[in-house]
Image 1 (cartoon, rainbow, N blue to C red):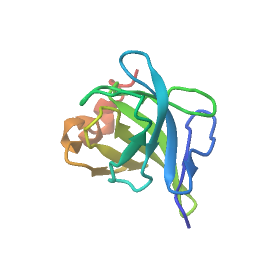
Image 2: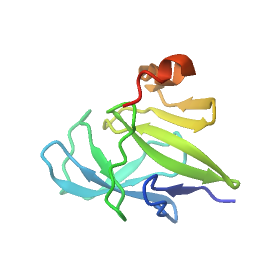
Image 3: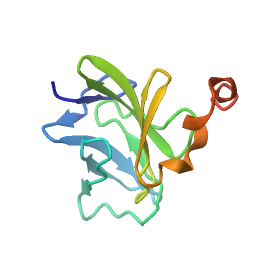
Image 4: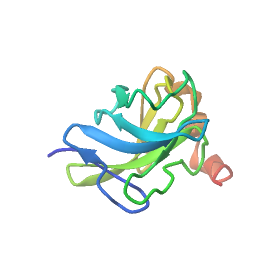
Length: 136
């Protein structure tokens, strides 16, 4: 069974063939499409050359269907999607900082961290007792 990616707000499909398609906004408030690889841990991305991004720039990401923000509820540098695989839904969080490789696949209490920078977000290493104080 193939993996599917959904918007957490409208549940719209974000994956077409081998691409996850999102809307992005850079620090200059310019907009463009961002195409991500659907394999967790593959940080390949594409965009039109006219959509300029600086290394380590924070990119705001949005659903291309409902235009809802994909920002995480608990960290300003992470975005959130829903991944469906083998009939199960997972929360997937990934860095919105260009060049930062951090992805977290969350299934209930189990977290699988991927990427060379995944140690930067300690939220996923905390107990539930402390996480409740960080939610916005």
